[in-house]
Structures are given as C-alpha cells and as structure tokens.
Image (cartoon, rainbow, N blue to C red):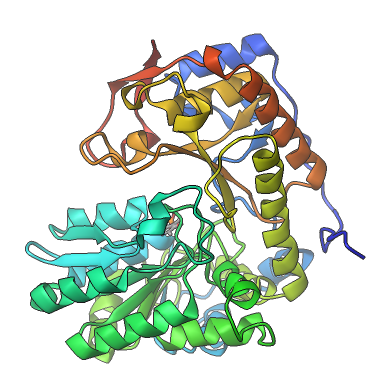
Length: 449
Ligand SMILES: *Cc1c(COP(=O)(O)O)cnc(C)c1O
C-alpha cells in the first residue's frame, strides 16, 4: 500500500469551530495583530507551535494515574532515568519544567561575559539565555541553509570550516559547541551523522565539549535513516543512540519529541558540572528528582520518549509534514525546501511580494491566514529575531502538533493558503507599535499600514 495512514485511532475528541469573520477581525484587533495574544478558543486550526501541543496516548494517560508523587526518589523519576539511560545513554540527568529551564541552568554555569557559543542555528530561547548570561551566540549553519530553494538533504549541518576557524582563534572563550537537532530556526532541517561526527572530532581537537539541543532527536534520526548513505538498515533507536553518544551533554524540551504537554531535561556527562547544575536546579526548579514537574509528568515523558521512536509513528510523522509541503510547492508557494520534520516554513517575502522587509511580510501573512481561515501560525523572521539582526529570510512556520490533526485538517490548511495566494497582493503590511527587548514576538503589538 502506498497510503501512509495515521498509526492510531481517536478515542477522545475535542470540538473545534471556525469563528465568524467578524469575530476573527475583533480578536485580531484586541490582540494587537499578535497571534500569541489571541485566545485559543478563537482559533480553528492551531499551528502556532508543535511544542507541548501533542496528543498523549492512552498508555500515557494510564501512566499518569500510576505515577508516584513522592517528593524525593519517586518511582516515576527512576523510570524516567532508566528510559533516558536506555535511549540516550546518559546516567546523569535533571528533569526541568521545559527546555529553556535547562538552557538557563546550563548557561548560568558555563556562559557569562566574554564567552562565545556557536550553534548551527540557535533557537530563540537558547540565544536569549546565552545572551542573558552575557555571552555571545553565533550561528554557523552551512550556506545552503539560507537558500530556501536548496534541496540539500541536511540543511541543519554545521559549517565545519567556519567552526574550525572560530575554534582555532577563540577556543579559550568557547565553553561549549551546540548543535540543534533538528534545526528549528532553519526550517526543521536535520543534521547528518557525518556532520555530527566531524563536529565531535573538531571539538575534541580543541578541547571544547559538544552539546545537543535535542528537542527533535527522533525526527532528526528518521531523516538520517531516510537520507544518509548507509543508514537505511539501522533502527531509529540505534541512530538516536549514536547521536547522543557523540555529545557531552544535551538540553531537551520534552514538549516536542517527548510528546508531553510540559517537561524538559538537562543531560550532562561531567560529574562536577552535574553537581553544580543539581544545586541550581534545587534553587529554582525543585528537588533533583522532579525538577519542577509532577511525578505524573515524569511518567508521561518516559513513555513519550519510547513512543516517539516507534517507526510507524516516525514514518507517518515525517510523511504527513512532507505532504503539506509538497502540496504548497505544487501550487507555486515557495517553502523552505525540502519540507522540514515538525513544520513547513513559507517564504513570506516571496508570498507577500508587494511588501518590503520593513513591512514585516512574515507577520502580515500570519495575520492574513488567520483572518482568511482561522488558522494560527507563527512568524520566524524579523519580528522573532529583531530588526537589529534580521535573519536571512522572513518565514511563516506551520508547526504540526504531534498526533493531533488528520489529513483533512491539513487539506483545509493547504486550500486556505492556496486561496490566499491568489489574493496575495491585497495582504497589508504591518508596523510594530510596541515590543519588549527580549523575545519580542511573544508580546509585541502591531498596527496595519
Ligand atoms: C522549543 C525549543 C527550545 C525551548 O524549549 P521550551 O520547552 O519551549 O522551553 C529550545 N530549542 C529548540 C530547538 C526548541 O525547538
């Protein structure tokens, strides 16, 4: 059979509804044209993020009842630690309430003024936490990552030449090299094993640890299995293990490939760093065996890490995102090619061809898509990263929550975008009225031009 189906059936349903055009307009205005500020009940299909929005399995819900809520040394914590050791090969791990808490703890310890942290492409919270510590965050993606039409199979790869020059000149100031799998900011694009291995070698040569930002480790492993020479016969599990074996540590948001609504991890091999991170965890997150989470969250997370490695799930997951990307490309809508793992990224500058970069084409398209069809998406561009260092592209991200929407939901999204594409010259530009200094996209307000 050629049809790849959702490898699950639906047991509990949650009604969704399209608000009227008047309601959508009023909601937009109340929110200052910022979709983060719109109440979710006014959204029909929510592609704002794939973070914490996944559907848990019947097994996960059952595990939630079984969970041990002991303050210290709970059975649920031990189960999670066993899972992490089995899948990722790390014995020293700290649960945190989400990925950015892991980042904050890590960069409190190893960041600071004068330090430099390279990455293939820093995610917004990673960059913000590094900069908050006083350090500088540098993106070193391969040049193909900036070209939306490039079909390079591993656009998440680190640029090894630039990394080596940086290490040669500045290794004393580099506390860690990070690599984000998959690279969220460059389009949900994977990093190859070959690139990770070479990065590992460079890091070893210059005595700098390598850390993964491993939010989507399973999706990255699946891309490796599908695209990298010699990997087709390996299991996703084996590839995941090799990825983690190459690293000295990892920050993880379990809200992605942990398929839970809240949770994160900090993995560390160095015993001294682990001890200091444990102290900081106790200070702000909670005791080291729960890290700001309930026992039930730890249970659900442990199961989520197993379920995400189910190969029927991964095949369906990557295929269903690719399906949306292919439909948009067929309609002439430029996306970041090839389609990413967790999301499709539309090139908003091309879509809103009449708008200049200053007119915020990404945010304009986000607003237009909500207005047209009640679909919520997220700008990844000038608004998210700030006009002071505009990224190479203004993108609109259609992030696909895990196990939540069916193919007909996604067909609706595709149809809405194709209709909007036909009227694209009527999309109005925007101007920022008010925005905070850090992470402006969450709370900025806009005005239509
Ligand atoms: C989501 C994400 C984070 C931050 O995790 P939160 O759980 O949202 O705090 C860090 N890095 C990447 C690549 C992410 O996608």
